[in-house]
Image (tube, rainbow, N blue to C red; front, top):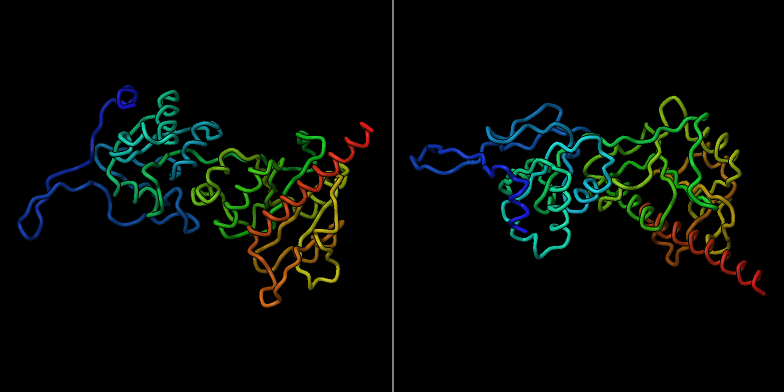
Amino acid sequence: MKQKLHTFVNSITLATKNTKFIDGSSKQQLLYSTSVPSYNYGLSGQAKYKRSLGNNLPSVKGEVLFGLHPVLLALKSQKREKIHGIFIEDKFQNEGSQHKVKSEILEVASLCKVPVFIVKADVLQQLSGSRPHQGVCLDVSFLKITEWSEQKSLPRTSSLPFWLLLHNIQDPMNFGAILRTAYYLGLDNIVFPSVNSCKLSPVVSKASAGAMEVASLINIPVTSSETLFCKQWWHRQGGQVVGTGTGSNTRTVDINSIHMTEPTLLILGNEGSGMGTKLENICDIVVSIPGSNTSVDSLNVSVAAGILMHWIKSSRNNRQNFSAQDTEV
């Protein structure tokens, strides 16, 4: 693995210089700003202004992904138009041979001819905004997302499409966790609005374990609305809209009592205010997850999302299995 690493690292240089301190001592010091950059939306990503990382290292050109799985999946999926460079901790190369994901990152970076920079952990701390980087950061261009329009035809990827609409989900950890579960369970598309919604960022990518880099994402532009998407497009495709609410809503039905046999769009509402009246009125059905203790009347949205998506997938699969058995008989 060390030999492989040397094939794509032309020069391993740490940005250091001799610095005299007030006490007269001389130390090796990294050439980078000690302050954490001010990032857009208060999250790790592209700095509002470029900040040099030292004489021997380039400035960040895009936004910085951090963590093993976001970096690996971004490299493998090639959805980012440009990959400007990968920053790895000096001990990363030694650990690669014993760590499957690290080994794969080094291999894919080599195949893609990505510029590699070996740096100290402090540089990675700055690049990641002091978030858990696991020894690697990736400077990439922004992720391009498919934009929905009423006139646009989107491909049908399965016989019974299952889509997810995230209505004003604002917490990046919730957003990322939902993306991770949706991708894991095999949902066809994840839709979200341009306004009043969490912005896609390296923090979301990390929270999703890299699922953001590979999932099929669709954005509803500011010139349109979720109402139009559900009412004038999804219904027209022959699908049903399933909303979510609490048991206190008189319209809701227990998720355990229904079975999905049609193309389904599941809406998950905002962490605090839920779906809102406009979206609820469009829903063909509103479901809730029954609880056992009234002291806690709701679930975190990412937890509820996992339960609902798994139940719908399971109920559809069970119904398909029963239908197949009936046909055989």
